[in-house]
Amino acid sequence: MIYQVNTKQLKMVPDERGRLMEILRCDDPFYQKFGQTYVTFVYPGVVKAWHYHKVQTDHFACLKGMIKLVLYDNRPGSPTKGEINQFFIGEHNNLLVSIPPHIQHGFKGISETESMVLNIPTEPYNAKEPDEFRLDAHDPSIPYEWARKDG
Figure 1 (tube, rainbow, N blue to C red):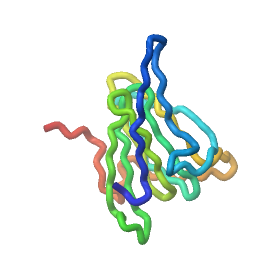
Figure 2 (spheres, one colour):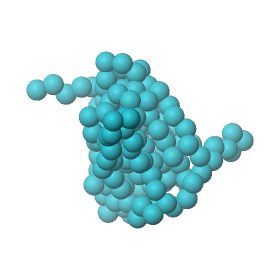
Figure 3 (cartoon, one colour):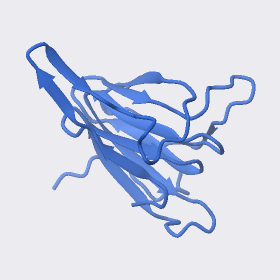
Figure 4 (cartoon, helix red, strand yellow):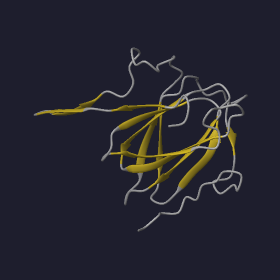
């Protein structure tokens, strides 16, 4: 696991009325603070990558469908510099992934229908000075290929 990345297995609690799933709690050991909450959608086979933040920590959970969430540690001095983590999260694996600042990350829709991804970042979005830095999804400086690996 990349240094300072945290995961939390999410528990679905069903009853005769439906289901409930807690995502992030203020008493989770990796919780820092609340910035905002938003939902983004990704179509099947589409890659939304790469980006990182200098201040913000992201907390991703896939609420509908499935995504492949990929992290790359390019932080100077990090004990896991150069490592890649892949997480297959969503309806078949309810997982929250906490992504610290300076970790390149992105995801790919891997369902047959669009996926819905929840993010609970520690900072509100600032349109005038966004804490968002991007690279192309296929940038050769990141040793990762988004293609499906059959086998």
